[in-house]
Image (cartoon, rainbow, N blue to C red; front, side, top):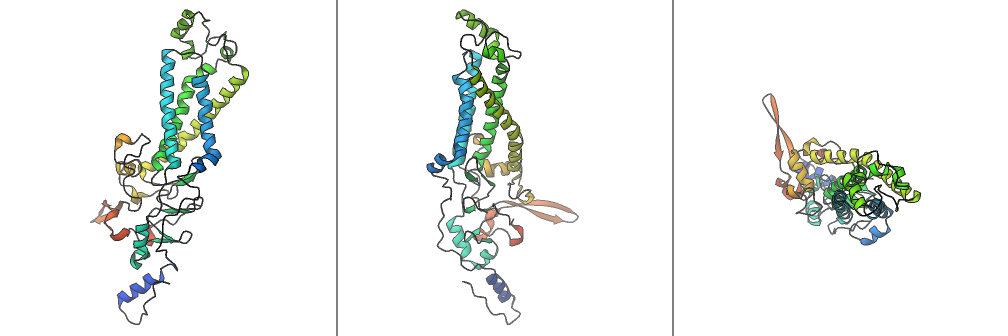
Length: 358
C-alpha cells in the first residue's frame, strides 16, 4: 500500500489513529486521474444516431404531428390556437430531450480526487470505487452502463441513452413534464373528432362531442367557402390513415397514464432531495426551495425552461445537510453546509449510501 502503517508499540492515540487510516487505503489510488469519457459518449452525435430509442422518441412525435398539423383539414381560429399550443409543447419537449441526451451528467472532479487521494485522513472518510479506481464524492455512484462514477446518479435511462445525474436531471424532469402535457393536449383536442368515425370516413355524421371541426364557426366557414357543412366531406380520412391516427392516440393515452405516475414520482423526489438509488434521504432534505434549486437552478424563472441558466445550485460534490441538535428534552435540525469541510471531507463512512447503479 502507498501509505505504510506505523508500528504501534505504545498507547499514543495519534499513532493508533494513523495506523487505522493507513490500513483503510486502497492498493493503488490513481493520482494521475483524468475524467474518462462516458462509455456511451454523452456528447457524441454518433450515439444519438445509432440508438433505437432516439428514433422511437422522434417517431412518436412524428405520428402525432401528422394528424394534428398536416392531415387536419380545417383551419379555423380556434384550431389555429390549438396548433400554436401544440407546437410550443412539442418544442419544449424536444429541447428538454436533446438537453438530457447531450448534457454530461457529471463525474468525479480531478482536483477533488487528487486532494482526497493525497490525504490519508480524507481518503478514510470517502468510499473507494474499485471498479473505477476513484474515490467517490458524497451521493455519487458507479454506473455500470456508462462505466464511470456519476455525480448524484439517479438512474440510467434507456430513453435518453444517458445516465441521469447532477447536471442533466433538470432536463430529464422537464422531458417527462412536457411529454405528459403534449400527449394530454393531443388527446383532449383531437380525440373528440376521432370518436366520430363516420364523419372521418364519409363526412355525413355530426360529432358526438364538442370539437373545432363541428363548431358553429367551422360550419359557417365551410358554407361560405362553398363546401359541405360536414367536416371531412370530399377529403375524408381513409381507413388506413384513420387506423394510424387511432394507434398513435392509443400510444398517447398509454404514455399519459404512465407519466402521471412517473412524473409525480420524480417531482416528489426533486422536492425531497432524493434519488432513485438512495431512496428516502431525510438528512439531505433542506427545504423544498433549496432542494429544487439543487436540480433546477437558483433562478425560479428558468425552472420550467430547458435552458442551462447557470446550472443546478452547488457542484455535485458538496451537499448541505441537516444536523440534528438536541437541547434539553426537545430536538431541532440545524442546516449544515457541506462546503465548510476541508478539501471535500463530508461524511464518515457510516453516513454514505453504499448502493451502486448496476
